[in-house]
Image (tube, rainbow, N blue to C red; front, side):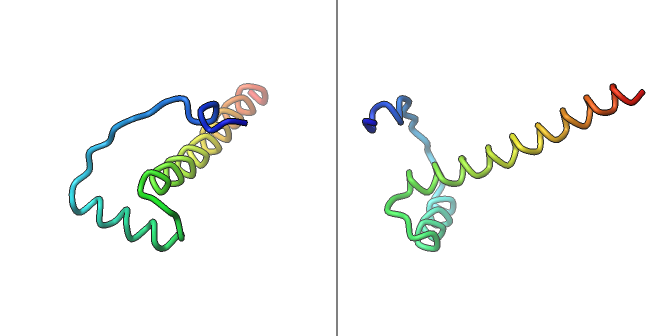
Length: 68
């Protein structure tokens, strides 16, 4: 699979010096090559956790409706 097929969207993000410093520290901690890669990893982890929490909540809502 080509890289262009994987990453079809590009975004430009402006961060403060403090945020840049924190991202650089996180990049080093994770042994990543770049800040954009660090941002992708953080977003991916955050969104997968959020998606799991949303799925659990929606399943609980369905269970609640079923057992009423």
